[in-house]
Image (cartoon, rainbow over the protein chains, first blue to last red):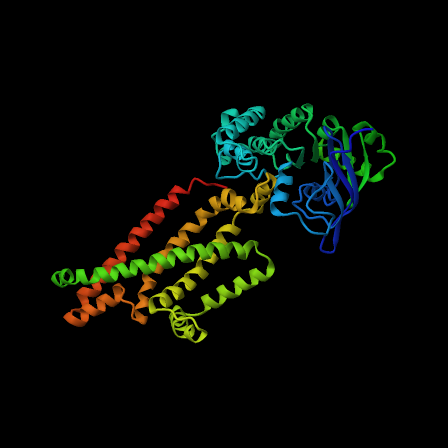
Length: 259
Length: 216
């Protein structure tokens, strides 16, 4: 018998007012797996990702990490977890944002240290060690004392990744992390993600970089209108292109705009 | 003129002490209450937000003079007997708190929402998010209007003389009552108020430079 999946999403629903953004989404992610979510704008992929660390409260269904319901004490729509409970669960799910969201008043090192220091309660020196280690891993050891405003977009996003992994999360959520970058800066960020994948980090990635999705992920999930309309290994998904008109349209539009 | 000013100084010092004491209490209490209620106004549940909104709108819509008399004459029938000193301090604090709430609201809501989300995502609890992420950024926008407000509080504290509290303004009037030399005394009073407030605004400029390194 194999171990249960690390992340279990079942019959997930979410509405913003009258608009239903997620219509019963089922998705499991195994430990060490890299799952990429692609799909047209408004298909609900970012909302799905934001539900996993409860930045968005979901209305129905369930999200479990290591068998524990995220956000709610028992089930969706019921009693929410306490502030302390929520925070400790969020610390187990690292998140990297499209717009970096680095703390502008803190240096690169302080950005990465904040979680280990205040959430994991590490002593100052140990927190700094952790920060140095991860800044080194993303190739920014020499920028430890720089403020975010002194870094390029690609460098800022690498600090963002270091900040997210410094807490030792069980799963890393990446929300269109290269969309705000100049094209020549995209690869330095994707290289860091590839390294993390090679090290066995479990990741759920929302991206528009189809090429990256094909060569870096174990599985690609294609979303349309709040549901998963196709999924499989990159090769298996490409094999479905001829049967799935929406997937075909999406991918062809994509190659038309990128080439 | 100089002679009259020098003669009056010992009398004025007592009043100056009272002015500074009132200002200090008002500024300190309103800072604490204003920050707490300002945070409540932004992040609190809807009923609390409405309540705070109602409070600030009422207080800011009433002239401070009316507020002072309302507290002084209005509270005893409700069973709360305050000395004229505390009635004056309470009224000025209410007024100042309503301002501080607005400064806090303005400063905190100017921080992009992504900052709160990033702070959540690394597992900080609400109070830590405020302390380590939101407040250090908001303070740069909070300080200039707030220090401006502190100088207003010093000047506005002269209104306590209406309830018979002997502050700098009352002391000046008392000396004038004895010497009949109005002009030198008012000049002296103006100079003292100016000295206090000029040092405050100089400090403000210093602090603004200190926090200017924060860029978005």
